[in-house]
Amino acid sequence: MAYDEMLAERIRNLLGRHQGVTEKKMFGGIAFMLRGNMCCGVVRNDLVVRVGPKKYEEALAKPHARPMDFTGRPLKGMVYVGPGGYRGEEDLAKWVKRSVDRATSLPPK
Image 1 (spheres, rainbow, N blue to C red):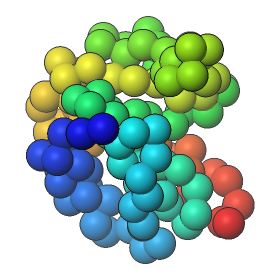
Image 2 (cartoon, one colour; image 1 turned 45 degrees about the horizontal axis):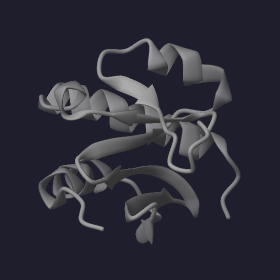
Image 3 (spheres, rainbow, N blue to C red; image 1 turned 60 degrees about the vertical axis):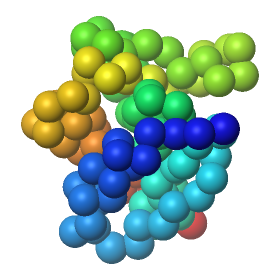
Image 4 (cartoon, one colour; image 1 turned 90 degrees about the vertical axis):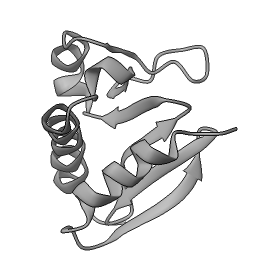
């Protein structure tokens, strides 16, 4: 399944200053791993953001965010963000920071 390569490149640029970033094909798109933990990703033209269960409802309240329901059931702690929610660089940076904050709160794998 294809994914938005331009969005992936924008994420790479934002994650470039972090150590331990790897990429993995996941969910039919690409996932960015930080210290072995899934951080964020791209599926088709949606941004995938790992926010964790405590920040889940807060993230869903943001414009263009919706539950990540890849399997038909929402994955608690993960949201999709449509293109309108990450169009601007500042908007994308905020979403990626949410993911980085979650991934770095977890023990390295």
